[in-house]
Image 1 (cartoon, helix red, strand yellow):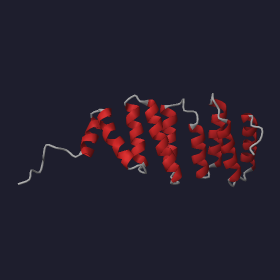
Image 2 (spheres, rainbow, N blue to C red; image 1 turned 135 degrees about the vertical axis):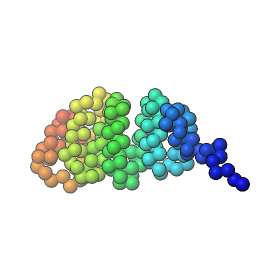
Image 3 (cartoon, one colour; image 1 turned 120 degrees about the horizontal axis):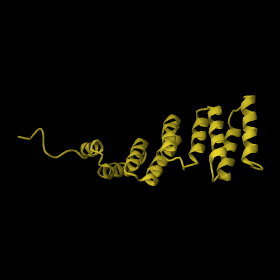
Image 4 (cartoon, rainbow, N blue to C red; image 1 turned 90 degrees about the horizontal axis):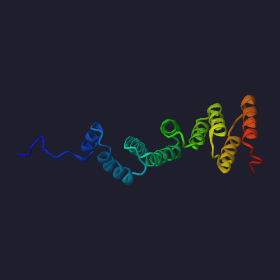
Length: 168
């Protein structure tokens, strides 16, 4: 007769137990291999990022979160991308380009004021601004259906503050 409660656990349960016991490395082994085999499961990449951050591996956490964000944006799941990007900004504020990721996600949701707010934050706070990325952001906004005169004025102001000569 087969035992109902065997001593061996399924790998998923073992990984969950490791998380509960704060054994981050053990949980990471399982979830990283799952994320690698299921690359389009962006929630796994988000979890891998959280586990890396808990394990004090900030660079690896940021890398995993970026994969999740990029995936969610490709799928048009902007709210998910926003949530991870906000978390990334709280946990790794030195990642300045997150403001542009947030701006892109807000633009995808057609939240133009929030999009411009994130670009304003990038222009004011980023120590190492990327002119090509800023150009790309401005170009996307100009291609969107932005009609509000106050937002168009804000866009002009941002453009001037960013010091970009011409978008192309």
